[in-house]
Length: 454
Ligand code: GLN
Image 1 (cartoon, helix red, strand yellow):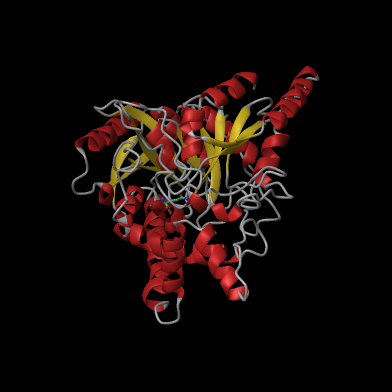
Image 2: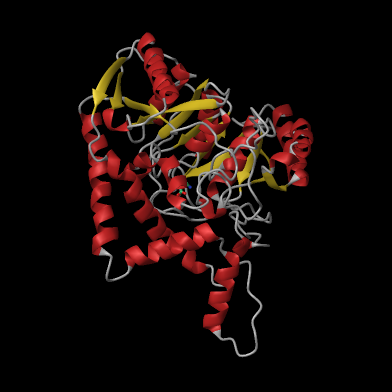
């Protein structure tokens, strides 16, 4: 903990930690020491971690990267962080993120972007998003592991950009209680760590049924770490042909081939599969996620949380809402609220939202059919490129930024687990990752496949 507290201060230039909790860390570290001395050390005893700013930590600023939550200190603790502290982990502080988890570069944060610790020239690179601070902090050794959330790739894409491992669990595996909501039918929290083993241990600590989240599954939590045997003989790995996008960089294609070789060498069989509706995943996601976000973000009204605009003489409640929301939400969040409100409006509901729901069901069915045909896991690239420079994407055209999510959003729509692992470096020397997608609730087997790629 002391080493991390020092590293955290030395790493301020990365803008990864946006709120540090050294007193809490030292108090928890002392308690962990006492538990170790008493011979009662749980799975993460004394392990210093960082927490994405999306999780409520009691008494600690929780702003979801947004000005509208400025000064908000929750009176309650999220289920996931409660479980972490029970497992002995030590809280170093809150980590930078895109505002309300909307983004792929951490540039929509009210704190300014986090910076990728990888550097190959004079440019500052994005750590990815939205869990950019989490990935940067783990990659730069400011903490041993971090919590992220993944609605459309926000654990896996930053993990890939920073050369670390991240898991998006099956929807319902990890409680969403006390996690600021973005798109509730897609959001899942998960670990971001230095290795598959670390991630497996952390997943074990945070998973499990929670009566406070109605979508939380009543299933036992397996020993994810014990599943890491490296034995995947006879397993069938699907390679979805629709993911081989036209214009895919040769380096990404080569990395994908290398991943196939590694799995084949370990005794798995590589099988071509088809996920015919995958090509509709990105537009489907960018209808459903903003629709749910526009509803979830309606609660930030200047009354209940955080920021309230200064009002002029004669302003009524409508002006208070308008001014507060105009000041509090950044441009990307405002864009999503408008898009979401539009696709849910009476005149366009059937054409957009309802259509997207139907396509979502087809995307899910594609995966079900692949698994029913005996596929154990699906291998694909995590991102269409390595980390790009800050300010280089999405300036004039927000869709350019959305394209980063082309490989990650499919499994959120289907509720499936996915794990991103670093597999190599590109010719510039930046990390590239592959992702494995698994059957629902079979994170243990999925992690064992990822273990082979590590
Ligand atoms: N980049 C995607 C978005 O902006 C995914 C974000 C996430 O997973 N939270 O919606």
